[in-house]
Image (cartoon, rainbow, N blue to C red):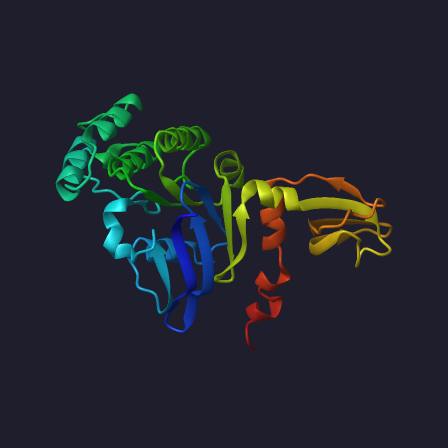
Length: 294
């Protein structure tokens, strides 16, 4: 299995604080991978390391088995808020992209995609809507014909219609190529419709990773008696639990054995799984930390 991105004991520190530490992950080639986690988990830092904008303080990251800076021609990147030269028109940005990426640049692809979206070629991109600017940034990244496309919260600030159009454009482009995508986003519903691989970052480390179908298949919500909820037959791990006086609701990772028939099983969504892992009490700041000294 070819790996598009591989990290081993990867770490990046800003001052005394580790944005990533002992981070191990693998993104198989050909996947559309969702990168999720709370703010400050290290998602942007990880993407910047993978694209070669940052150097690690420990460990290593490899893109198709090589250092990121040695394969920049194979990487497309759309940063947060789709930063573009706002005084340039879309046509000028496409032309500039061709001059900066002489090894592999598809001008016709960029022009056709932007024309199909109704984006004017002669208007400064600073005067375009947020959704249009995001589409311009995506078209420029796709025009590189990248083997790996990294997207850092590209749709967070867009309205629902613009988000749908962006994701449709992305899915259409990926379907026509063998591009691997690593997409950072908080919008779990959009990710569940489009991604087939999940990486969950929490407290600067990978908390959960794997194919989405396998993760959904291995987790269940169980509803059953309050007594005996600490040890349920067939359960490998209780991820999250809530209780009433007589009943317990558990989100669990299943084991190899059948689950105790006293418990009713329900399938889970990607959002159910992600939120259960993120609800770990260890991520919360105690109220005492906000107390003001007298």
